[in-house]
Length: 384
Image (cartoon, rainbow, N blue to C red; front, side, top):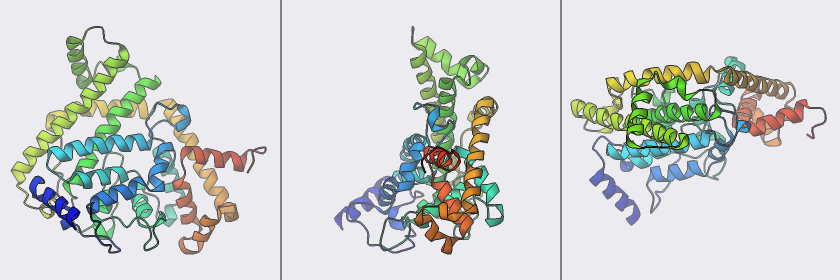
């Protein structure tokens, strides 16, 4: 297979020894012949992009519910931004960009409608059934719920991409403990890159969305050193910039500053630790992909600001509480009479149990679909 040999030769010549190479993959749960022109991680990336769960991210909330406006990030646009940032970092560190991109594109597949409030609602409703965690559900999506292939359930992704989904870890993501992936404390550098790329993307793009929505004002940001210093540099360099262009340059510069710092600091970490293989990385009891101590200090006030002034803004809280009510009421009415569920969902009840089948169904919904279902079930004059 000439195509595979070209990819193997490319990886051997350009990737670092501690990068995860496709020829070293632990493979798939259901063995498949290799593709003549794509690596296993390239195939994973393509399977994710063509999945129904990936398409549904277009209408799933990041911070603002879809009907609030068409400018704001959705789970899909956020995912694409994470993938772009992650590929840049991976390439600079001589890691496997294809694996990194596949993990990035899959990292939010397990999210419900209405962002974290939807997840919180399902977790509360499913406590006696093992709860709900979007990383665990993301793995369930790619291993079982996607129905596309005649020879196996799910997407049959490689072990390394699945590891990246279940071990995804940020301030908003709790790493779930699954026996299959519990041998090592750490994950591949490619997974670690996606974790940080996710944080960089949502911090800076949520800031952009918050300013655009008017929920936060630029005058609120002048006390943040990282924002103030970049703003001053831009004003010195450009005269007469419009507010729109200046704000775009600030957000762009914030991302670039953090990505550059991350690449440099991670390079230093690698030089000190001297890993020889990907296995060496997994055996380490701490993250290798990190910011410098100075960047951590600069980011901390920005993240605290977003938490207090955006995520806890009364309008966002209202949206979140209202969204939880939608989820709770849909769950209650479906459990009360499962015959209201679509036929394919009813067929899964025998195997998965009523609550888990209902949970899977609700978790798959987009914001728009969940709102439409709510109207059909609870509005007297709405067609069912």
